[in-house]
Amino acid sequence: MKPLLIGGQWIETAQAVPNVNPSDTKDIIDHYAQGGRAEAQAAVRAAADAAPGWAHSTPQERHDLLARVAADLMARAEEIGTLLSREEGKIRAEGIAEATRAARIFDFFAGEALRAGGELLPSVRPDIEVAITHEPVGPVALITPWNFPIAIPAWKTAPALAFGNPVILKPAELVPGCAWVLAEVLQNAGCPPGVFNLVMGEGSVVGAALLAAPEVKAVSFTGSVPTGQRIAAASVPMNRKVQLEMGGKNPLVVLDDADLERATDVALDGAFFSTGQRCTASSRIIVTEGIHGRFVELLAEKVRGLKVGPALDPASQIGPVVDRTQLDQDLRYIDIARREGGNLRAGGNMVRCATPGYFLAPTLISDTDPAMTINREEVFGPVASVIRVRDYEEALHVANDTPFGLSAGICTTSLKHAQHFRRHAQAGMVFVNLPTAGVDYHVPFGGTKGSSFGPREQGAHARAFYTQVKTSYVFGG
Ligand code: ADP
Image (cartoon, rainbow, N blue to C red; front, top):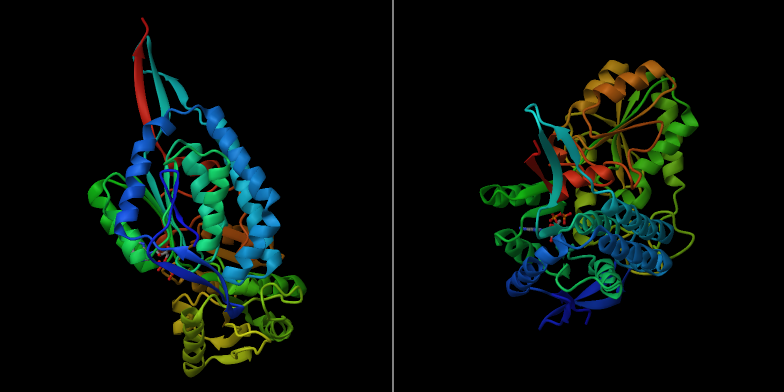
C-alpha cells in the first residue's frame, strides 16, 4: 500500500483502493491508502504546527528545497511520465512532457523564493516610510483534478512552499500515483515535517474535512463548477482565500484568410491532444463560410488519421478516456449532438485495442448551432463541434456566447482581426494561430467569467494568492 504523508510520517490506512490503468483495466498500478476525516484533520494540525517555522525559514532554505525537488523530478521525468500515462491515459510523450514541466515549475519557484521582495514608498507625510511586504497566508489546502496529475499539484505546491505556506494536497481519486511520487520527492529532498502533507481520499470526505477546518487559510482548487462553488460557499464565511479554476467551453475561430494547413493543425492539437481532456481544449470551432467547407473536409481527414491506442504504445497519438464515467459522458454528449442535428464527420465510436480500455475515436461534429447542448456544456473528452458563421463579427459574438471564459483562439492572417480578437475575446488567455491549450509554465494561467475565481496561477503572478500584503509605517524624523 502507498501510504499518506502526514507530519513527515508515512501513514497506512485500514482501507486501500486500486489505481486502475485506463489503457488496460486488468492492470492495477498499485493500491493507495484512503484517508478519511480523521486523517484530513491530522494533516491540517500538522500543517498548522509547521506554519510558523516555515513562514520564518530563510529564502535560501526554501530555494534549496524547491531546487532539490526540481532536480529530482527532472531526473525522474521518464519514470514519472510513464506512471502518469499509465494512470491517466495520456500518451507517454505527453506524460514525460508534463513531468518535465513539473520540474521546471519547481525550478522557477525556487528562484521566486529569493525574489519575494516588497516595496518601499515615501509617505505623503514628512519623514515617514511605508513598507509593503508579502507575508505567507498560512496552511493551504490544494484540491486537484485528474487530468494533469503532476503539473497541477506542482503548480500549486511550488508557489505555496516558495512563499512560506505549508500544504495539504488532496489529489483526485483517479490519479493518486503522481501525487504520491511528488510527496516522496519532497520527503527525500528534506522537506520539514508537516510542511507538505498528502491525503488521498474522496472529495466528499477528505475535501469536505479540509474545507471545514478553520486552520486552512487558503484553498486552491481545480475541477468542476459545482465543486468550485461548494468550496467558495464553505470558505467565504471563514474569510478564507479561494482560488478556483473550473470549466471551459473554449472557442477557436477560423477566418477565411487563415492558412488552412496551420488552422487544421491548430484545431487538431487544441481539440484532441491529451484525449481532449484539458480545460483549455478547443471545443467549439467557429468557422467563417468562405473556408468552412475546405476546413471541415481537411480537419475531418486529419482527425480520422489519428491513431488511438494504449498510452504506453509508442504508435499511439491519442490515449484512452480516463474512466468509464467520463467515457459514458462523452458518448452521451455525442448522442445528444447528433439528435439535436449535428453531422458526425469523424469518430463517434469506440476503438478496439488489444487491451481492455476506454478507447474513444476522436469525434468531430459539424453543422452545429450555438444553442445546441454540445456548444453549451463542457464535454471534457476528444469531442469538438463546428459552428458555421458569416463573418468575423458573428464569429466573435458566438465565441463570447458562453458562461465560461478560460481560453480563446483565432486563426487568421489579418493583423486587424487578430488584434481586435485579443482585445475583445472574453477569456483569460488568448491564442493567435496557436492551439487554445498549451500555456507556458512561467506566465499566468486562468480565466474570466464562470471559469475562474481569484488571482491567477503560475508565474510571478502566483504570489498574489499565496501571500497577504502588509503595509507598515516607520517614522524616522
Ligand atoms: P471532476 O468532475 O473533474 O472529477 P471534481 O470537481 O469532482 O471534478 O473533482 C476535482 C477535485 O475536487 C477532486 O480532487 C475531488 O476529489 C475534489 N472534490 C470533489 N467533491 C468535493 C467536495 N465536496 N469538497 C471538496 N473537494 C471535492
